[in-house]
Image (cartoon, rainbow, N blue to C red; front, side, top):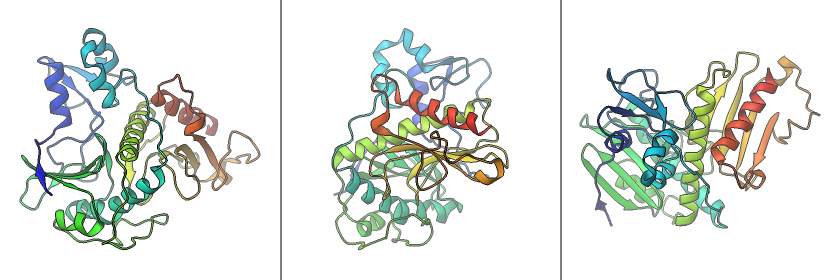
Length: 332
């Protein structure tokens, strides 16, 4: 059954919260659609477009007039809301449920074969982003020129077009494609480690706690990746993307010899448990010592940190950023 809800703009919501005289930066994409190359997507943490005379509130740990942690010092009633958006406050991951693997596979297939191809048809790009309680596209120009975003919110599929927002429970790939006025596309966004498209009419096994965990994992990852990107020690960082074929948020950092991918997998065929990773592109160029226990990945040259190894008393955003920054620094 299709229902309707109010349209969302993450930045507008944040700026309404902070009030007059302040700008706000968030981690989710917001309208309007960006129709210019090369990204065809907004940069939600950029502060070079704020109005004169405004003070910009930025995600915790980033450079700006003040960060959300500082702002929360005077507005403690908003702590839960800010933490749920991974902007600051006390951020914690929920427990990973036993249904994570089946839910992850179902959402991975949905992202790769239905959601990402719709954006690609409009912009030539298929990268996705974290959105509240899930993931989705940046805003792009819809068929009528309206700002459009497709996103997953828990177990629901959301199609926002301008001020109209339709919501439908996720059931099958075929039903999702019909809801979005498209077709199941087995080629456009598929990458080497994409799951099989499978039977498009078979039920997608999606459990709400597991879907919410994946949304939280992606939110944590984007918060930490933006910190790594903003770190002055990170050379030539790319924008964070949730690649649909791999189904993990990642960025690339480093010069032509020391470049590596830094990401956060919700688990995969090789490791069911969610984990952080650093994958070195050209280990031979810089003489990486693969016997060094710091480079503990088994299926590639690099490092991994499993969720079960996270300190339980530390903000996971801090854990992830410190893990990635330490590996970057070891690379030289």
